[in-house]
Image 1 (cartoon, rainbow, N blue to C red):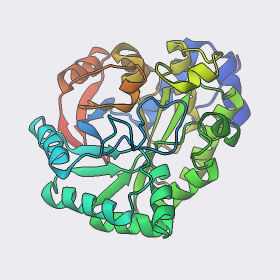
Image 2: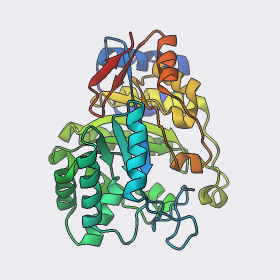
Image 3: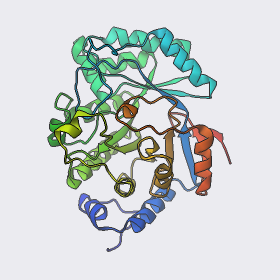
Image 4: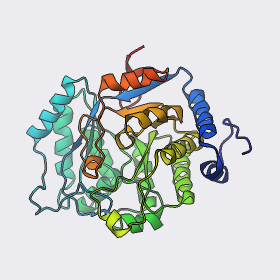
Length: 355
């Protein structure tokens, strides 16, 4: 199989070879060694948060999404301030520190609506970090409001937006994007919006949804795009990847050749991501899509963070994945593999240690 020096930056060719040819256990050992080099104290973190989807109304019509609705649909909604406040109060009761705030891309809402909402939350709940609005939402707010992306980000930051999630990256290949989400922004636009956020001091996460119509080469290209932007801005706090959840989606009907991804594939990709993304310190385990035990295994394949306790999750659940875990279960899973559990905030500062 050859040898790999974890202290040397991987080339795309090496990464492809690891992905295709290496023994899974050997790959896991390499990724775990890389993780320990970046996190020598053996601490595995998690965050207590809630995913609040402020609306399910969306005009983008992604075939892989089972969550979105049209404006006239019976079950279409926009949450009221009272409903959002109640969700945040419930989160505070269990020691939560962050809301992941995302919606469908509503065709009519403009920048002032978003400013008022962020300001309301930030003023009423200053202790809560607002991690919200994907690049796709930001792009559309800019277009709908006839202002620049930079202005959208500046205005939302001024009202209390802290960081932005990496949603909407899917696979950073326009060939794939044209097939699975033709109305979404292209890969360069996604990268440009994150770059603009980073320049303004707004950190973000990078994501990948695999398991649709991408090739191995396109997966490695996706890693490379993230690594290149991180070299330039150092604005990504973490990388999170998950497999496409196909139940209830139009994409499965359109492309019946798409198969459910194995746990083996998830761990293999995760290990290669840990080895390739040498400049992204944190990699999250996607237990929400993989289940808690593969989520735990991911900690031996390069992940150093279990992500969120996810008090509420609607988008992945709409596509058929319904896994849940509370803080006590997370602590137990981390301890079970001999690591040290700790609760963190959005910026990966340790808030509480359980060791």
